[in-house]
Image 1: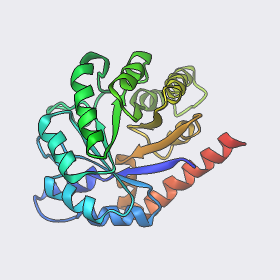
Image 2: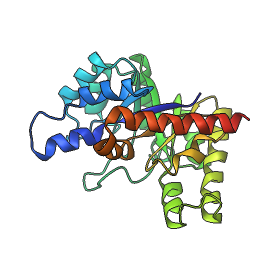
Image 3: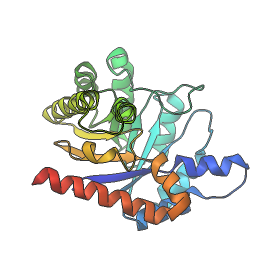
Image 4: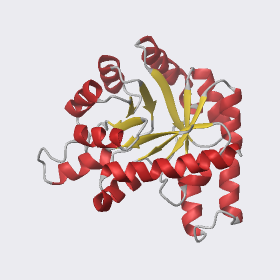
Length: 252
């Protein structure tokens, strides 16, 4: 069964809008868990624009499902991860001017550095993941640096889906799905776990959830946005139903 990792960064974004103490990301993690989330993801950015160090510590102590820490491959972030010891750490590119992560990590262009970072994470008992574009060279480089998980960047697919009238049969959408499928198959052949995420929502997640071999989808903004109207527990429950339906169809 495909798993759902819920990114709760935007709960912290709402808190930071008033520089106060609520809503509490830990409370959000509990609600997501009760809705059926298989994991909780947060991104501790270098500028601390939403999630803070104390959030990460408290989430690790209180989260009862898998805790995934997104982070840049800096010495500071590696040290934090090795101290907190989330179940998984996902290395992502990071730009201070970006609103959200805009592309995959260039693993092929920095193999020596990332090999060192991955080794440090694994020595601390942390599953090492990389967020990459659906490209053969990046998948192969991820295997060489020792990553155990590759999360494919689904942003290009999501944008094609939206630009083509939310029609999964549109040629541009099919091309992006095929790119994800090919890269996912290579990830699996290389002995790594195939995850996917970015810009997925209640309309476009189903085709990705049906890709052969995909293990987890990480979804945040869409779920937190839906939660404004139905509550976080119900928003997670609705997404889980979509993924379960896609998994059943793929297995049929």
